[in-house]
Amino acid sequence: MVPALLRIYMKKRILYFFSILIIGGLGGTLFSNIFARNLSRLPGLSGLQLSGQDQTVIVNKTEQVFVEQSVILKKAIDQNLPALVAIRSFYNDTLISSGIGFVVGADGLVLTRKEWVSSTVNKISIEKEGKIFSAEVLKKDDDNGLVLLKANISNLPVVSFSNTEVYELGEFVFLLGVKYDPSGKAMSFINSGILKTVGGKVLDTNINEDFKLATGAPLLNAKGEVVGIAAVNSSGQVFAISSQTIKEFVF
Figure (spheres, helix red, strand yellow):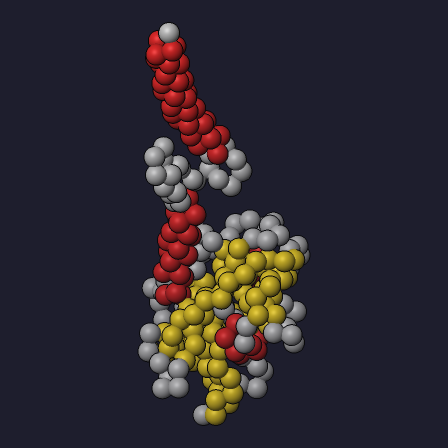
């Protein structure tokens, strides 16, 4: 009697053990699939993928965004860098000031700031790609600090202006300029930030930059369009006269 009861008891224990294994395996598989499927719906985690066995985490959306931004920024730089020029003002043969401007007309029209062309100068030169050309003042806007020069050169690459008259708070913008190393070699540079005040003729940014590097440089948006010409206030903060005001002055 006892051995028979023992055999029945052992069979029940074995069946119970295998039942637990089967149920546990099915439960783990279902939980893994349901968890992975719902995880992808959570905000900020849509770029994550979990495999069913090794739970490998794959992150790709953030990297893709950085690559796209890098490509856009490079395109904007390549588009506008050829339009930058160095401007030097003289009284007779004495150098009075040296700054930057950019080409707005293929026939030699160059826009710059009044800081680089004072009323005391009697000779102006524009340097582009190591070549020097004479220039003269075509017109001035003292209220907005704008100066339009006419250089003795043609077939120049020009910047493109933003067509919008309304800019967004927090919109990405960047300066594109040229500086010189101690040997006199020209080097391009950028400095980026956002628009923190918009409306009217003046656009304020959160960019801080040296007066000599920023004044007269184009302020560009992510599309590579000029949204303004940059200047620097007494605190070193960059502001810009808007593209709409520039176009009314130039064209």
